[in-house]
Image (cartoon, rainbow, N blue to C red; front, side, top):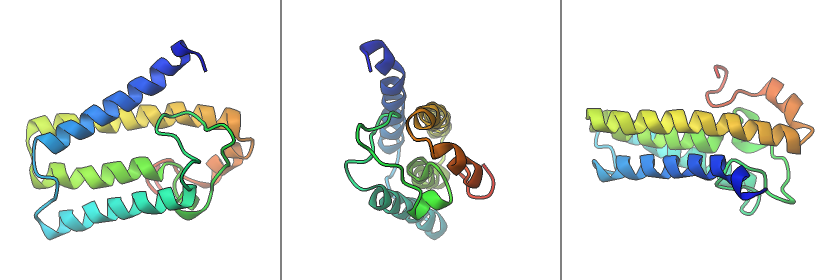
Length: 148
């Protein structure tokens, strides 16, 4: 991929990290209320499960495919196509809800929009790279099981 072709994926990652950093720098990193803490830990567990299913070296932080990578439809990928993105949202939503400010809401919404754009971009790359991805999309949801 040439430099111009990397502008979109790297921009999406930059916005993702900036949003995450802004959320972490504007309030506590752990939710205090037990409900939000459970949701936060659930998000972390989903992320760990997704990485374990994908295996290190088979994924990329940018929404591009890895040379020599393999298609994964096991683990949380049986239910949703982007569990790592879902994990980020589940982990950060409690930070917003438990320590709400309009500024944090803005950062979380920016993260949400960025991750949706990132997954849409990534899905096109996956369709081009993995022939089985087309049928996989018919049996799984993008981000929320049974819904979207």
